[in-house]
Length: 185
Image 1 (cartoon, rainbow, N blue to C red):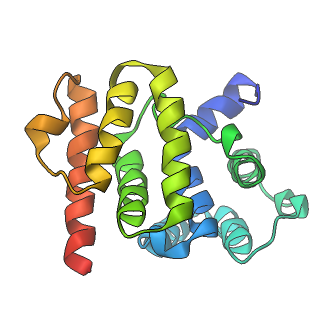
Image 2: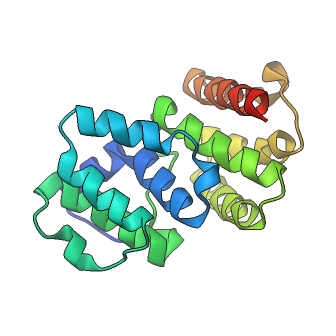
């Protein structure tokens, strides 16, 4: 992980879900069906420059000139996305200060993609599982249930066994997102 100033790290941690979604969306747009909606919400909340930069990245631009004209917070987020596209190991840890509301949809999209046979997503999920195992605690437990989730297990009691309340909330969020995705297909 790249060592960043504490303020930058806090910005990245607050936007981990978005960063992961954009990186996933660049690899396979179908994996993040809610990304356009999230970007529209961000625009409505005044994040016009950030959304414009993200749309350029989604359009294929990887040039750091995208960072020009961005305020400090937007530049940190966009920089993290660009680094994550070059080297997925630089992506922020989904388990650190996990915001289940943001992490659940991204993880569910990856699980759904892997379940539907997307090899890139399956590999990315495998890499994430290794990182999660190293994190220990709920993240290690979550890594352990990724395969059952990909295989279709949706039993909350079984999947949340041994997790803290926060871990359980994350798994329940993932299950809710997967249910929505399953209904669409």
